[in-house]
Length: 367
Ligand SMILES: NC(=O)c1ccc[n+]([C@@H]2O[C@H](COP(=O)([O-])OP(=O)(O)OC[C@H]3O[C@@H](n4cnc5c(N)ncnc54)[C@H](O)[C@@H]3O)[C@@H](O)[C@H]2O)c1
Image (spheres, helix red, strand yellow):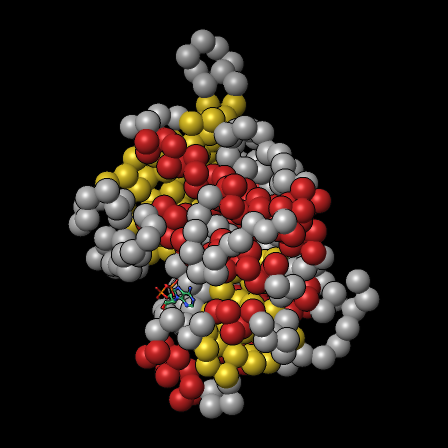
């Protein structure tokens, strides 16, 4: 694709909690212009109309699809609607940015990736943490070997609410952790086991504890909850040379501990030697730019053919695959579930395009 200049003309769909952040950040980008917004709720549209008087407001997604001025659609609607809206937008020839997770099942996510490839359109999933400066600083440290071999990663993502109407806490919060882990480690989990509980609403897990095993030997743990007295976004990465505590939102989000334990083979029976090291703690300066702004700038650059998405379709697929494995483990009373080796198994584009052309009708906004 020949890179082009000129602002990307975007429609933002879904103006609830998160969508207005997309509108604000696209509006700040020199490479984008929000031509229209869409929500089925009139009050949500009204709020945006007051702040952005020149922007067209639509209560029907069909109006966005038929508008030739819209070249890209950014979707921030409930997870269950992602597939229908994204599929219809791609089928209408629009580039698509869709909030995490890409879709509500691997099968749906695969179809979106295939369709985007077949049409030569950008499809990017909003895995915002891939654009977070602390996450990128830690990625550099891991890849540069500063931590040594990674032993384990433990992540806590808990706060009070917000209970989502259509998905569990796993589908809501784990996309962040799974995307970060895939980005840092370059591999997907090989096994998953999980327990959860629907404390407030039965059958709607609002707390989950997930254990992960990786082929490399790394083990991981996720603590996810909509029920916690205070907001915590804390990750500990422990390596053979150094350790890191990443506290998102703290003024010093990344702390590197020059700490560790060395093991020396016993010289005689029962006399092994451990030496503990607690050295300096360093908080490197971290860029404070908003990850969402960087993410949407990357999307616009990809649409313009100037860059490729950091949040790749492959990563988005792997995130959905890992979440489905968590659900399978939950369905098996916490049994350990093995994930098949990663596959590049999206449906061949030709077959999918033929199905679209032969009248597979995808309802905008529903499954
Ligand atoms: N990247 C992040 O850090 C982050 C943070 C929060 C939410 N999200 C994601 O954003 C998405 C939305 O989450 P939210 O918390 O804003 O949800 P929300 O329920 O607050 O808002 C969703 C909005 O979509 C509208 N909507 C639903 N169906 C529609 C349709 N067919 N056409 C037009 N509008 C429709 C609803 O009326 C509502 O206003 C989810 O995918 C969520 O995972 C991402």
